[in-house]
Length: 281
Image (tube, rainbow, N blue to C red; front, side):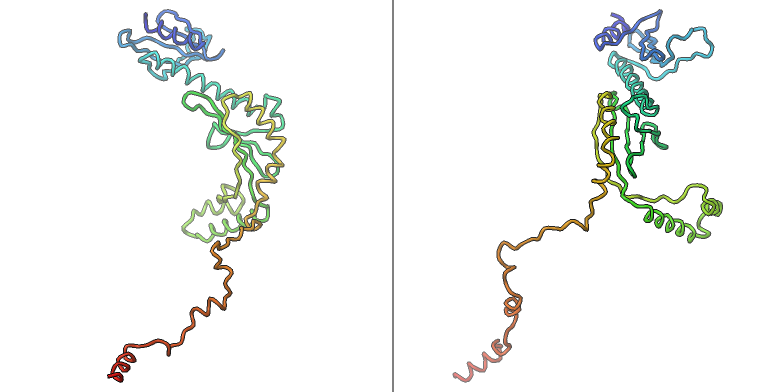
């Protein structure tokens, strides 16, 4: 069997369709995207792996398949296909979350994180966030869900902000003058202030239909969870008393002090002992 025939057999076993035209194998990922294998060595064997838009005229000058990897075995080819299928599923879930296409999350408004494009965040309850991280792990798409409740009030936050800005002003010549001017005018990035928070882990999901069921429940429970997470105060927690099982706690202080009292006259010194021996002689 040829390299393409081996790959086609393995893909078919995974329920993935493929077709071969001339010296190229096409594997559809979505209606708009496909993977192309181009054999470069039938004996080694080896094939270039391309990602390309589906249903595009080969004569289109703007069309260009992008080389993404090289497959030297059937397993390499299967991994490439699985990886791109997982990536497409991740993108689809993120798009559904950001666009709110599912009615189960109608009460949630997600926004993409500034630093991590795979993380989306929705503000819930009064001062909490629902965070969903969607990524591919070992070729399998999954979503990690966390509920984060921030424990602060507006007055404390304003005090911390004022203190941080005051510290920046005290830097004087050691700090950039232009940035100080921006801060004084309310422009630019202010100081980074750490806000205490409590995190409730809501699980990791590979079944995305169940994921949306869970997210729908979060919007209903957010206020209750927030109240329970931020209401705990260490000062309100009475630490249990520790008792001495040997009864030392029952001794009076006077009894303990009495053990330390002694009469110096009762202590016989070496000189006293020598005097006593001489008298006897």
